[in-house]
Length: 183
Image 1 (spheres, helix red, strand yellow):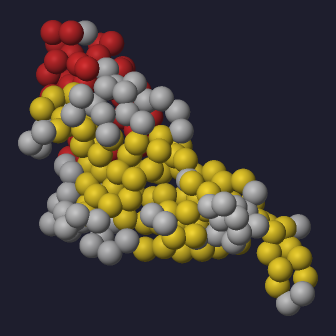
Image 2 (spheres, helix red, strand yellow; image 1 turned 30 degrees about the vertical axis):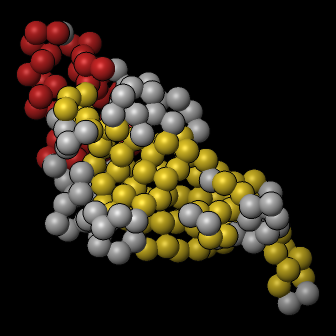
């Protein structure tokens, strides 16, 4: 099955978001129009009903827009609308897998973004899929990574949760680190 474009690139945000398969995706990719990309493994199955996708960009599929879905509700019934809203909600907040290096650090595109003392990593990607399907909005994506870490600062050992946020809503993505909790 071809890729599924969730949010298309625009003049203001030259990134698009795609699932690797329009029926049973296992990976999600943020791709810049110039070729760089970040691919993330989806942590739970996201089956996509075939009646909710249509041909999109060359070689890819896209979700029905809100207006297209509403037009089909007349012939196919309200269950289609419920299915569309449910799918859009699932695609707007996707749990993803962040790889860890041999020494335990969380890794994105080959770069360690947390200390080697990381013991547990959780990650969620939120997207403005609904806004894009309703009004062709520009991409607004946020990858939130929380990692349980043990840090040594000035000779003291500190167990904490380190948060890393990657925001893609402009030409240049932003990344921020913060300490979420300390004992």
